Image (cartoon, rainbow, N blue to C red; front, top):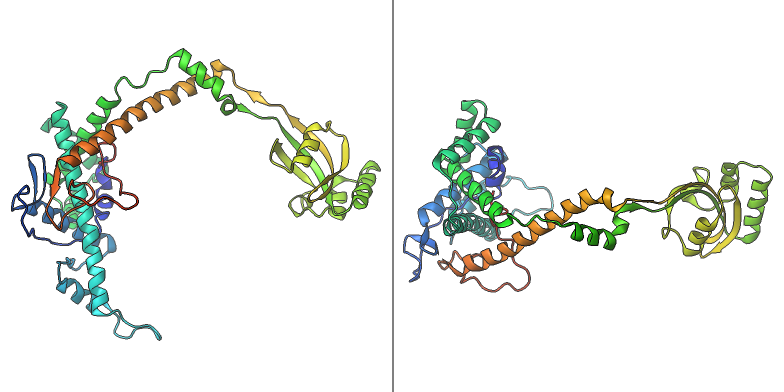
Length: 384
């Protein structure tokens, strides 16, 4: 959470709510918890609390005034009943209402999505709190309160609006303070990781410039008028008419089969090398300004053309390009350091995260190996 006003959107990402209770046994996860991160446990109460928040938030976002129905596995009885009640009494002709089994499958999908998203949020928060502690990074209660007050003022200038938000979101002020704390720690970790990684020496700037000169220049461009015909004879006739003083627009309208330029007098502006058929391209960039050229035979037919304007190429000097290059190199250096940190951060903390059966997500050490790609894991760079 970077701004308090974003909280409704962020919580909405948790999708539909589902109240769950821990079951089964795991020697490494306490009986009242769904996951363990090093010496910290994510309790069932914590999990259920944030699930309820998600359910309330979704209801508020959809404009529903009734209390949300939370899908409870394995039978999802209340969820199915609510879904059945919401079905129209008379479905459109030719359509069938979903069966109880189909509604149960929908409730199960809601549960699965919710479980993953809530656990990812809670585990990520634990990772950031743990990483900050390991690195000696901290924030005071005063700093958290100050940031919270600033965000609250920006999003909810009126206290009544803030209280309404708390009611509709299901969150307490303590929940918001928790998110603010995690965000501040995440920012501090990022700052520490990227500190000193934004250097760019004159030699590095020069090397980058020499390797990427094209990025700091504008190639020559030409405006051209052209007529495209099917036969050489037609092209010769068009060229003769132009030589006799007939306006190019009139000649293009009479002879040209190029629908892209015929309607605007045969004009093609801002042409740079490599944009056209090679034969036509060569003709355009070898032609002298104002001289009628052609017929030029191409795979599309015969062209008669006239270059009307030449805009010379512009190349920035090393001195002119240096500020942009320096900024680019600094940004790259910081991102490289951050990427390396994130990779290690995820690997190390995943190795210390165990989840109870039924609550396993990608961030858990006991998660099955992905078959293709893995979902993005929130890190100190994205936990907001």
